[in-house]
Length: 471
Image (cartoon, rainbow, N blue to C red; front, side, top):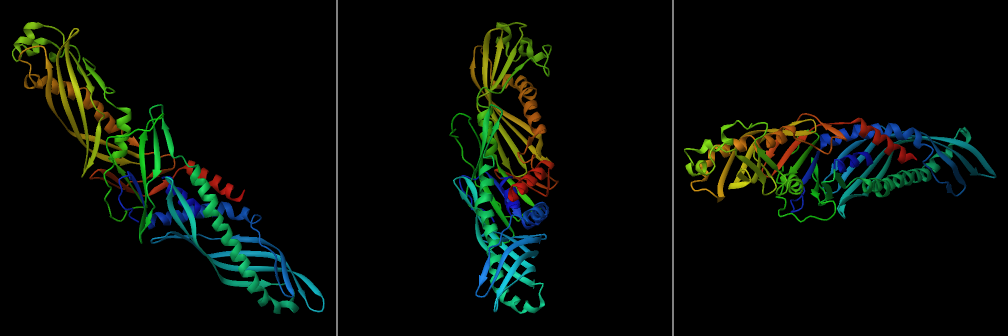
């Protein structure tokens, strides 16, 4: 159970929408079925070495006692993992097999001694609740049960076999208590220690940190459950107050595949706000796409449309400088991703600024998914402009439009398209790979539903967790 919940946390019910949530992970029953395979992998690593770690106390009742009980065999089998609506996750090993060796003593006219072997088939059930505490997920044991499907006690002494039935009623509670004690310890202490140690702040170079904070308690439904979190970029030296908040993620559809990842455009915009604030995006012309020989880079281009410009600077070279005046704002919409960025275009001749134009650039595109990379392509780019200042009569947005179109189409737009095509790699790529699945751009969030494959790194980490469990 620890392993599966750990996977849910990492890669960090329909949660009630809040003004905090910006990422939601939705786990389906198919995802829980995959969790069963992962847990079975862990069990194979643990159970053989765990025999010497599990202890059973001495049992004494009236004229008989059982001492030195120790596990000689343990086969938990593949677990069953399911959702308990409104409570949490249920873990069940319906056919767990144990063998216990020990010593017995019975007093008749004198004390008689011998050894025993117990073979039992158990149905072990545990339920764990999950809550958000101080921005982190926390588990707690909600229920534990051990039912004996079979109980075969061999005293290796035919004469005293009649006391076996007396011993059963005393031994089974001790086994039940020992098993539940270990499960409760796992859920209440060990697992929470692992969760506490998970990274909740990830540095991105020296630009910003990505902070992950549990937003609300998961709410468990019949066929799925969601884990909600506020995921945002933040300054590395101080807390940033953003001039925007997440829009509610509204989606009640059952997940296709093992899991769905719903990402609000808020998360992307916090990174854009910090990394690409005003003045961080700068381009100038001439450049590789527009060489000095291009007609728009000489005042002769405007000889007929803006005669005063040509008259003031005849046959002079022109430089166009472009910089953003606000961070690029990303918005997910139905089947679209929209990037909006206001820029300022300065038109200069020599050291003289002839005109300054404010332009609002809007780029629309589509998105696609390949493994853990979300990318896309531009389908349209539009802009609206207004004149801020001019040193020459006759300069208007209309007379500059042709030049502005070419400058934007060959400076900022290619850079935006490059970002679209390169895409973003989800921070889960270290832990698992998303197989091909459903990708939808919704109103203010992106929805990705897919099956997953664990990476070699995750398998190695799971092995370490198993070793720590039995250490």
